[in-house]
Image (cartoon, rainbow, N blue to C red; front, side, top):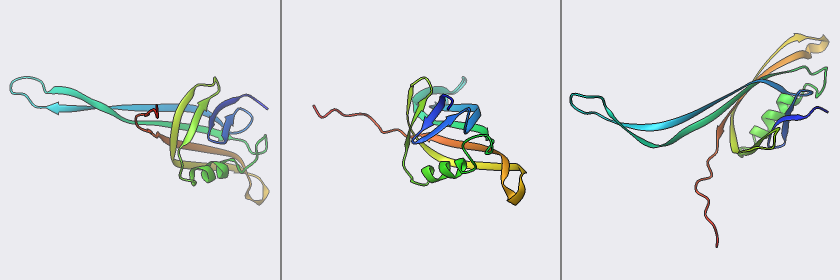
Length: 135
């Protein structure tokens, strides 16, 4: 089996199974605006906004991994729990909540089995808040 590209909870993305072709991350920052007479507005940094990751990829069910991989993504997301996101280099990105799973299927075999599936997985960073020590 090929090396894992990324792991979200129990689900692994890899070249042999659900491989993502694009990873897009958007991090937002909040700035409060105060109007001033005769000059530009003053800005004050007020904290972090949302942090989103969108993965888009393709699955070839006849190759490896089978046609149930998107169903697996949905089942994990439906548990309603944030999941740990770890990339293939071992970097821990923290916990993420899946907001949506989209799929598109084409090139069908007999009985309507797709030969190619495309997916888009959108998730939002789940901030656990400040970590407080018991000691």
